[in-house]
Each structure stands twice: as structure tokens, then as C-alpha cells.
Length: 375
Ligand code: SF4
Image (cartoon, rainbow, N blue to C red; front, side, top):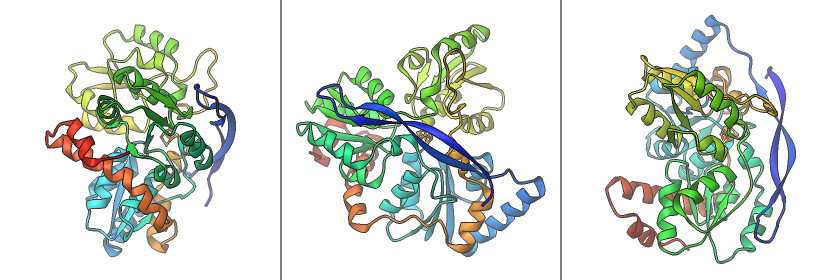
């Protein structure tokens, strides 16, 4: 399809060190951003997608960071817009035979792993993630092999093969709870792939952790110095930060958490103005749910900034209405996961889902960890 192809730099750990973990070098990838449809094309595409969803027994599952059209259409047609944890749950539990996952590749793979008998379509299978790209399974497995005494906890933003190497999977909405519970049982943790989220979890839980050194190209670019200047211009604003951001940005936050936690904080806080350090795709939902409040993007640029991302993920931007219609029409863009690999990758995902379901019921975290029984 047509669209601007852009180069994207990301970091990949290149070598193993004894205790410090891997060091990084810069690699290159690409993203292809589809052209914005005209207003009349937009209306036609939405009508076509509504019809195809009915005809194909399909439901849309969209991430908070994708285009507002794909968020609104998902909700309007009985699908879901949410974070990766809820996307995984929803896809697994929904009766539709086809899931259309608008997001990045690991989200489609997770949906397929949890629903191997369903057809999982994505608008663009090349939509990737710097955390996934920066954590190739062979190098990560070698890191795990070098630390056999540690429980391997990986973030959702990883390939099926990396998930299959893990004991636990977490998203940013449950990472603290899982690691805190493992730490309380005396477990030492090997964490991957996001170094900032890993450092945040270590600071919050006190767990003994070694970390893979990957980073999200969006959140890694938020700048503390410029954020402080912005805060001076907006002294009444509250600061909401995703923990994939650097520690000096997290330190300035009034609330730190996953996309869902950021939404909750914006709803519950009395303030009328917020500075938000996460992908700008999130602003659509924040503004829709909080019409009387103002949301300002946290700065990514400034002295010394490379502004690789400008706060919007180039791979999330690959999702567009035309491709949703196309994959529903043709069946192209189907996510495939090797069944045997999928079965192995499902183990840490199911542990996470059982753990978070137990927490929701008020069960004690320590008992859940022991009951679920990961290595
Ligand atoms: S925003 Fe960051 S973590 Fe999310 S998909 Fe893009 S690169 Fe990956």
C-alpha cells in the first residue's frame, strides 16, 4: 500500500556483561505510515468495516495508542480499546471467530497464542516495537542461561519465542504486583526487555533484579529538564507518566502507571490540567473521557534531544482504516504462531492472567504465586 516509509533507530543489547547485563548498540528498522483518508473516504471505510465485521463474525480490539478512528470504531462495534493486558483477555473471552487487532505485532501474537482456534488479523503485520526488536530470543536466552538461579519475568512487548523462554509474563499494569510477590517469596528476578520499567520495578519493590537493556523509542525520549520547564509554565498541572520513561522523568510524576492507570488517575484527580508522558495516541481517550480537563503532551525535544519518536509510536501509526477494511475483506494480515511455540508461550501468559484474576477477587498475592507455581 502507499504511505510514507520512515527510518526508525532503536537500541539492541549487543553483548553480555557479567553482572551489569547487556550493553546496547543502535540498530535500524522502518515503519510505513498510511495516508490519512479524506472525510468522505473515512465515512465509507467505516461503513464498510462495520458491514465486514458482521459478515465475518469479527470483533475489533484496539490499543490506546492507535489512530482515534480505530479506537472509536472498536468501541462502537462492540469491541474494545484498552491496554495490552485487557486486549489479551478480551480477545480470549469474546465469542467472535475473528479478532482484528490494531496495535503492534506482539499484541496480535498474544491474541493468537491465547486463541489458537480463532483467526487473528492485523492491519499491518510489519508494525513492530523497539522492545520486541531489541530482544532477539537467542541473545535473551543466553542472558537467561547466564543466570539460572533467577525467575525470568518478561514484559508483554516481546516475541512469542521470548515469552516461551519466560517463567512469567507481565504488562505494565500488573508488573509491580507480580514482582513484589515473587520478591516476597525470596525469588531473584531476571527482567526483560525494558530497562526503565525494570529500574522502576526494582526501585518500588526492592527486588534483586538483573535487566535486559532494551527501551521504548517513544518513552525513552521524554526529557526531565524540559518537563520541569513545562511544569513551571503550568504550575497547577498534574504530571502523569508511563514507567517506560527514564527515571528522572518518573521522579517528576504525580502518578506513574500503565495506560489504564493513567486513565484512572486523570479521572480521579481533582486537577483541571495534566501533562502526560506517554504516546500521544493516549490523549484521544483522555480527552474523550474528561471533557472539562486539559491534557498537554510532555516534551520529547530540547537541548540534546534526538527526537527519534516525537511521542508517537511509528509502528502504532501503521494501523489505518483502509488496512482494517482490506484484511477483513481478503483475509490477508493473518497472524501465525507455531502451535508448539504458542503452547510454551501461553504458560507465562496464563500465569499472569490467573494471578491478576485472583488479585481482582481479593486473594493474597503470595498465595497466588505459590498456587500458580512458576519456577
Ligand atoms: S510505544 Fe514503545 S513500547 Fe509501545 S509499541 Fe511503540 S515502541 Fe513498543
